[in-house]
Length: 444
Ligand SMILES: Cc1cc2nc3c(=O)[nH]c(=O)nc-3n(C[C@H](O)[C@H](O)[C@H](O)COP(=O)(O)OP(=O)(O)OC[C@H]3O[C@@H](n4cnc5c(N)ncnc54)[C@H](O)[C@@H]3O)c2cc1C
Image 1 (cartoon, helix red, strand yellow):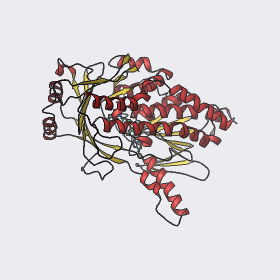
Image 2: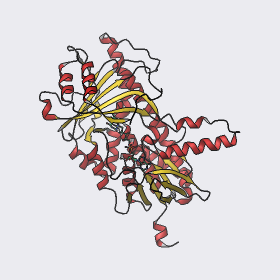
Image 3: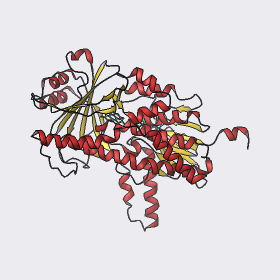
Image 4: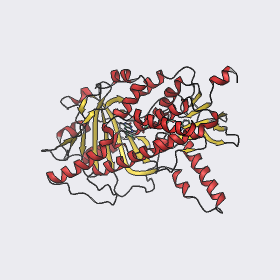
């Protein structure tokens, strides 16, 4: 084998330059894989505003040597024994509910800052291709993966990682191909695998906005949550405390997994009349909420969709990660962090010295074994918390839990705290050690 062939283990194509794809490129940075990252947009950018990283993700950032840089850009470095405060803000007195304490409080960042730090750490050997929208892919009998792009160009790789978000083309092609194979084998009976191609509508609209902090004199900057039936509101400071990140959640009754009824894009700018209509609905809430809502300017409206519980994150030499694999409701602020965990485990497996072109599929199977159950538990727990925050039963049977007395609210509080406990500790590096042991068992 020539020395250059030894250095170039195999070709990895990453589809998507969001937080998951960029993290994977950073993790693969020190490996001898040949890495191409394809991004459909004309620049690496991000929609959305604030982002919170809890202990499991900051542990990974520490491993990657990025934590100090991120801490400098955060509102404050992770603080011990702190966490979001919950308020029953639809009443003007006695509205302090509880505070969820984390051993290491979250790092609140502006998304742009996180993207910029990741970009700075992608090695120059990684080829980043902009304006490259993948439209389809297939794996041939020799194992090579062929990708087609919207500009009529094509490319080849030995591994394809779909980090292309909730509407992932990688996932769509993967599940269409798996469904077709099963239909070919069973006299064209429609395969249940087709239901995994498209995401489902959660029935939740999230209005997101950044408010310059100077417009909010007198507001306690870390007042975090205000909850009530049908609506709830989350606020936290970002960008070294210069802005307050505000998300207003409107839960449309009985809309979970129904046809998406709103025309236009899932993420849209909101007209002034719609903002005024929302503000009206909060008229009887506590004064701090009124002050925040009066300061909201042209928020964006996100129609929240999620990915169904997939049976696989991997097919042949293709894997999906992040929102492509497990887009979730955002009540934990954990979607990007789960993409980071996927990228960390997958990147380390692919760059491991036991992994080579001939055993890529085994490495991908380890990724799926480790990450699929964990990420899907987080998706379910986040959905449960979303329901509890509006005092609904997590069973999704439309019933409300009693929530009038202190004891009743305490019961709901404990359910929320239990669902959230997984985020209270580190564990990403331990998860990697488990993955490495499995890889060794399979390949040694
Ligand atoms: C209201 C709200 C609040 C949230 N708050 C938090 C939070 O506080 N903390 C947190 O951890 N998470 C949060 N999330 C979740 C988080 O935003 C996502 O989970 C995260 O962005 C997923 O990252 P990703 O890289 O998997 O996908 P994305 O960020 O969607 O990136 C996908 C990338 O792929 C590109 N792409 C798409 N299709 C193609 C194609 N065909 N070819 C090439 N490129 C393509 C896109 O342009 C994009 O750059 C929140 C989500 C919402 C809706």
